[in-house]
Length: 161
Image (cartoon, rainbow, N blue to C red):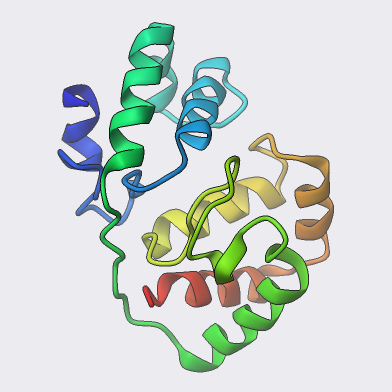
């Protein structure tokens, strides 16, 4: 966890909007993310090198530690109209995997509500452009969305409630 603390904070609750909050995420998701960065299927200038240097035991330990930490949801300035539109998109396309309105995870998915908006925006765009590997179903759903739809989702998830 000490290696991760520089960017994500000691408990995984990043204070920098460009670095995701990893506290309270599923241990399976954290493990998947680290392996995806190490394999280069998720783009990053920093995380790829860090993840490549981790052993299986270190990945398991980091996933266990950060999954047990409570997530501190960020309250950010959102446009209520965009957030309302984002909620409708979420319910139509995302709720099956990102349960409870994106507030909880199933084993394989991330908690989205309260995540930093700049990070959400960057990742959604990476998925939409095909730069970040994802399940075919998610990519198919994202292909239906334009930039305004993605921004609406960012406002919905970024509201922190």
